[in-house]
Length: 353
Image (cartoon, rainbow, N blue to C red; front, side, top):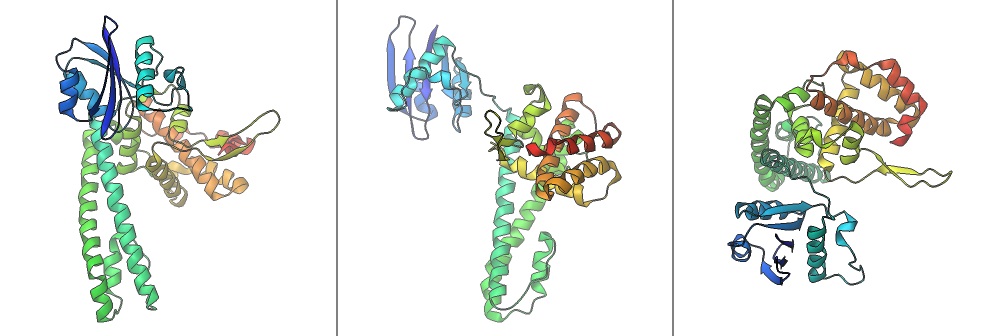
């Protein structure tokens, strides 16, 4: 069976094909569907390895339509690069290492997100950009009015335009803020439409609907959590989920010294943020169904402060959501035992945050 590899890049990619007779074909091609079809179309079924990247999914899908077996490999797996030296790095050397990994099987598969969750993630990304754009516009409007000695009352983001309209602005400032008013109004409409779409998603997706039974977890947080994990069976235990989402601390320990820092970097920082926001909602809203979570977080806050307690609570929420998804059960507050949680917190579990 023929095998090969592609060192993918945004504009041009390096290709290596090794035939059954041992003949090596090296090419540099433009990263387009037409050029991939020209190089790989018409060939007998072969195994092709590509590194997981922004372009890897559409390239893999295109090659699979031509009947080839495609391996999307984890680029963080060091043994895949074999004897490649770090002092000299070129695309040619990279593709040689990838082709050898494809032949020898020295690679680790990267998870390929389902088409449905990929679409949900794209929608979440668009919504996040709209939210950030609205926040920037509101901050700019506040800065302009404050510089003139005027104050806009605080309140919910959705009511900002109403509160701005109550301020007695000079005509020149009204003209200055007019474009911002239009932008914020448009963003409010777009975000309202996006939120309606995610509410409809709750009804169509039983997993998302199940996760929203936990108070403080809304359609956006539940959809983002499911889109990030994609398949619950990928993870053997809840601790792997919290590590994957970056809700565990950095650690550099040796011998008798133990050093722990901030939470680690994650490929899903937006999910991190949403879970921390959900933790704050649970902290502030006196819902009897989440009393156990609050009691546990309060015990940590007394020892380490609120910020650390919120990250710890976000981590526990991630573990709970994963368990609900894995066990296919709705939120059951009676299963969370307050005494045990407080005892664990007092024993020092929170120190790992």
